[in-house]
Length: 181
Image 1 (spheres, rainbow, N blue to C red):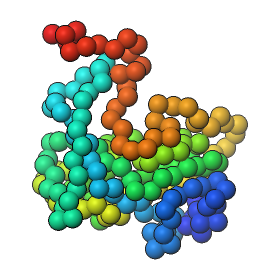
Image 2 (tube, rainbow, N blue to C red; image 1 turned 90 degrees about the horizontal axis):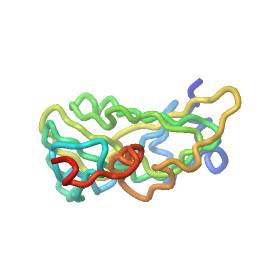
Image 3 (cartoon, rainbow, N blue to C red; image 1 turned 45 degrees about the horizontal axis):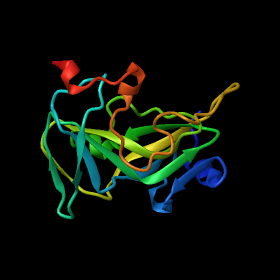
Image 4 (cartoon, helix red, strand yellow; image 1 turned 30 degrees about the horizontal axis):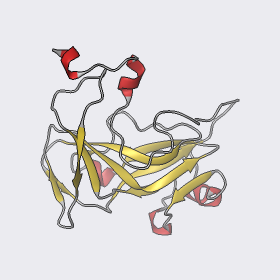
């Protein structure tokens, strides 16, 4: 079952943390999260799963930033969240989707026990100007049945900012640029 907005609010400080929390962002069964002013972009257009792909930061200026199609931007939420007893899920807002802006490609599913900022995989179908502070996505919570072990030490736990893919850690010894040649 999905939690209602009033249950989300009643669970704050015990089973759910949303910091900062603003009442105006609470919906009937979700909470709107806002876009931070920093983005990461990968330095190369060609990525390799088995290596740490380099990225650089871009700041969204007050007048907005024009995103290019066919380019991945990694962003993050302003809000830090923590979930102790519920399964957090992230979806784009319909108003954002209707502009052709995707806020997650595949990673909208969270684990019970996740603590941190949500990294957003931002992709657009046509050029679009974005702004820091916009309510870009919504978090909602499912109940969980049965015994479970909470997420407590994964590679993205307790993040403090945008994180590029850490999948390369699952490949064992890291490759170098010369190994790719």
